[in-house]
Image (tube, rainbow, N blue to C red):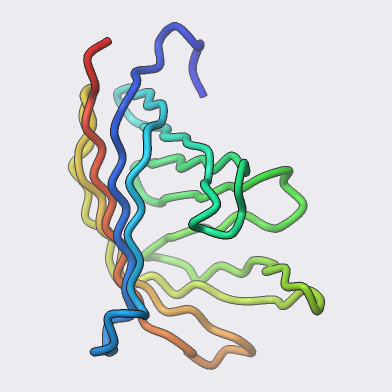
Length: 147
């Protein structure tokens, strides 16, 4: 992330839902404070997870690059989740019973990020053994707070 004094305090709204599910319980919404740093080509967003997500205290970082989004969590022991319309990526997902290699097949990335925040939308499939197990829509909104 850039220099600490260049980061802005922001309000973050994150919504995620399976594309073909009518069950509201499958969706999630998280609202939290975080830090945001924007340059001409890359935006970086970070926040600390709450107990609502099941990973209380874990640092989550989004690197929003021109052609892909990289989601990094915690201590780096699990692989980064990389959303890229050009290439399928794999990551290690840890469960209480062991780790699973999963894939992300990104269908679309729509973003409008600027100096004071913006919007990001990602449509993607999660795969296990190259079989799609869920189709997902992820929406993120970042708003600058008074500094």
